[in-house]
Amino acid sequence: MRVLIDGYNVMHAGGLIQPQIGGSGRGVRGAARTDAFRKSRNRFLNLLAATLDEVEAYQTTIVFDAALAPPNLPSEQGYKGMTVIFAVDDDSADDRIESMIRNDKTPKTLVVVSSDRRLRTAGERRGAKVLSADDYWTKLDLLKEAKERKRGLFAARSALEPKPTDEEIARDRGLTEAEARLWRDVFREVVADSEFDDDLAGPVPLLDEDELARIAREIDSEDKPFGKKPRR
Image (cartoon, rainbow, N blue to C red; front, side, top):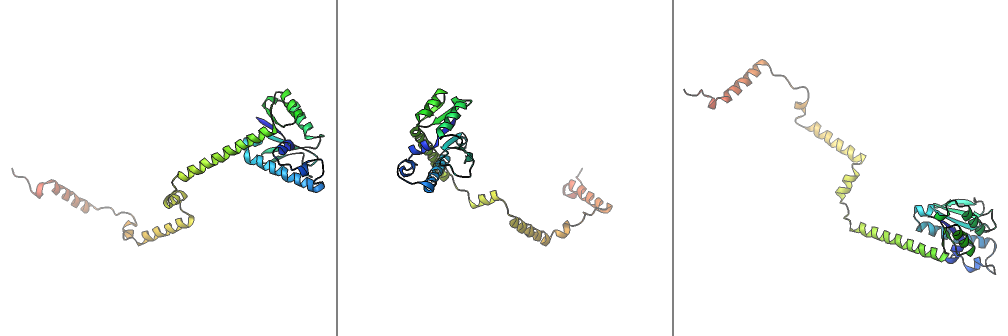
């Protein structure tokens, strides 16, 4: 399922927007407020990226208002596999999200994440699944717990597996070039010092007729018991 997130709405529900920077009353203003929003926004995006797997991140789009968008960046960009949109061509993020819901070709495969009544109504009207900001945070907590549990099981399984011996590690690694060169030199010296070196060198000599006749006589005498003719 594709997920369309009302960015600041979900951040506010998760406590990532402090009152002094998010309210309309007295508080942080100007560049300091913009920088505070940037840090909170990055914290939120990093949390999502750390919790979602690759497929979930690819299917997730987060829309933010354009008023506090970072300068010199495109209105749509990728961030750790997710899609991040700043509604620079709309009056608000709500306007952009509502337009995206209205123009979506397969709305029944879409999840709209927002506690804003206007956006929830727009999603329900087109058959999209609607999830409140609080429910989405609950889902993220469950995903995080599942990932940590999986990581713990993997660590426990790894601890139970016997560690390879130095001999097994060396066999799997194979010889380094230096080790191979050393063994080539050792065997070269063994062959050079061998007492059979001269005997093995050159072609094997052929037997002449006298040698062949002598060998035939020896074989013939071995066929007779004790080298004597049998009595008649």
